[in-house]
Each structure stands twice: as C-alpha cells, then as structure tokens.
Image 1 (tube, rainbow, N blue to C red):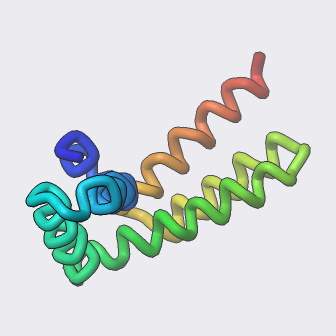
Image 2: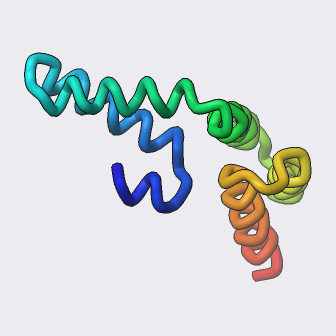
Length: 105
C-alpha cells in the first residue's frame, strides 16, 4: 500500500485497502484501512486522479478490442494528452511508447 502511494497509484492503493478491510473486518487493521480508504476517497485533490484511472481502464478495455497497434498507441496518446499531469497519463504514455517500439521491430 505504501509503495502504491509513493508511486501515486491511488486506485491500486484503494483496491489494496479495500482488500485489507474485507479480510480484517473485525480487527484493528480493518478499521484503520477503512479509515484510510475513506480519507483517500474524500480527498478532493485525488478525485481527478481516481477518475483518470477509471478512464484509463476504459481505454485499455477498448484497446483490447482493437487489432491495429497504431490505433492502440493513438488512443493511449490521446488519453495521455487529455489527462496531462496525472499518473494514469504517464502510464498511458509509457504504454504508447512501448507499442510504437514494438511496431518498429
């Protein structure tokens, strides 16, 4: 969870916290994790990050349906431009570069 936070992977941090809550519902760990998850979800500065992760997941799902690697890279680049400055955009840009490099090979 700490590593996800350090890397600004807020969606992953929330998923992990939710798992801790589920597994340790009756324990102090579960209570702490629930409070942390609520704080993250309520943090206004993270709302755009969380929304961008949801949008990124949709782009990835759509890309699975595309057969053309160029179209996949273009969709990822468009997403990255639309979400500049957010962690999901950085990941989209990285994936687009990897796709383009694989096209060159």
